[in-house]
Length: 60
Image (tube, rainbow, N blue to C red):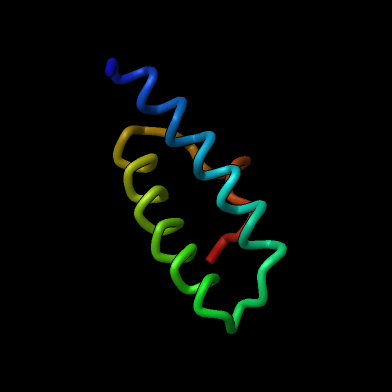
């Protein structure tokens, strides 16, 4: 998989994950698991040079 495809998939997953997080109770175990993936994706995207200012709806 080329870098551009990987970035596209990561941005799409980051966006989709945030939609799920917004609809989930913050005290649930599901939210805690999603938050862990949210942090992983945030690190990957930031390290890849993606500006998350507009993409990050959770801002945690």
